[in-house]
Amino acid sequence: MRTLFLSVVVFFTTISFSVFAQQPAKSSSEGLVWQTDLLKAHEISIASKKPIFAFFTGSDWCGWCHKLQREVFAKQEFIDWAKKNVVLLELDFPRSKQLSPELTQQNSSLQQQFQVQGYPTIWMFFTAKDPKDNKFNLNPLGSLGYPSGAIKGKEELKFIQDANAVLANKKG
Image (cartoon, rainbow, N blue to C red; front, top):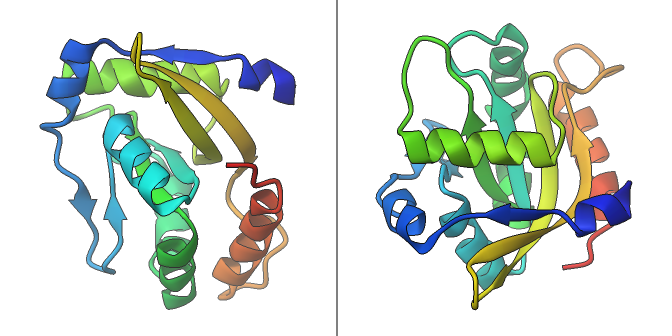
């Protein structure tokens, strides 16, 4: 399956890149910055040599996504870990609000490439962009979801442990 993903290419045109570049990053009250644009996340990832942490969510309807945000992403241990280890990318699939057509296309394309079927899902990966045709090659490290088997109140510790196991596959 890993080799299948290595050969997967996400197509974006130069025109859509300029539209994506207009999408602002989302700052949370916890001090985390979530990119919504793959191109921007790619640039930060290349500069920092950190993998992209793609959070597939339904921001306005997914209860488990809210639970993950509350019990993991809002905790200081996760915030410190994320700032040190990954570039955050939120890929939203809302039901009540409408995203731009370009953002919807980007998110749907990545959802298909990673075969995401449920929420929340997190994929960690590196990207390589071919300058000739503006295509992204994805180098997936692995995926995560809500941390099952975690001690109540310490979900962030189990999540970080699981995420570190995925990062052990790092080949950026």
